[in-house]
Length: 267
Image (cartoon, rainbow, N blue to C red):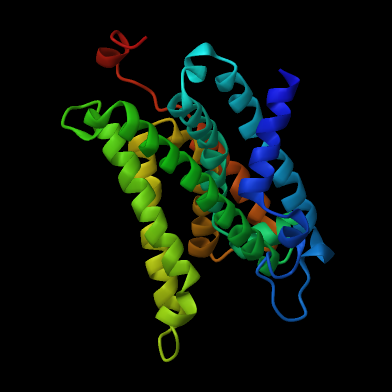
């Protein structure tokens, strides 16, 4: 119903997104010095992203919470909210996985500092959604199905989800305390290497937890492939960045042909 959609959106906005003026501010965008994201669309992008994540959460939450199964008791209500948080969480992880090479900044008309600031803001929001999803699932399992973390093929999904959340918490902690953990004389490249390695583990575990998430990684794969091609070919990114990205997107979406022996068993 309309009231349920409104309540779900209000919950997502207040509990997860926080106060929007703070998000749009320079501090929340992670911008320091003279650079202002509002000059090249950073704040507008985050405003649109906020509206999208409320939609991604509000619509599934209204559907789940209107179902009699999720109205059985408090534990099932928590489960409905936790499952709804998985939708915006998937999109957040897909976006933060996209690298920010300089040719993307030129294609979008933004500075690289703006892209990095948006990356940090979306990453913070991803951690909030992950907390809601993971804590809600764990609370439901503890109340209704304590055998979920036992042994068995289906139980692997629970273990993969728990490992994803634990690794994401470590990843967020390393990023949050990077100035302390990687202070001079440590080189910035050291943090970048650790950050990239932990991010790869998070994405791999997330795919094990929910295999369709691999499809969400197509944009990240395309951008990384285009950046690698431009770097290896020593081509001017300003002139060939768009073409390289378009070719990479088509290659990512291309279906691999199957052999005749496998095609007969494929539906």
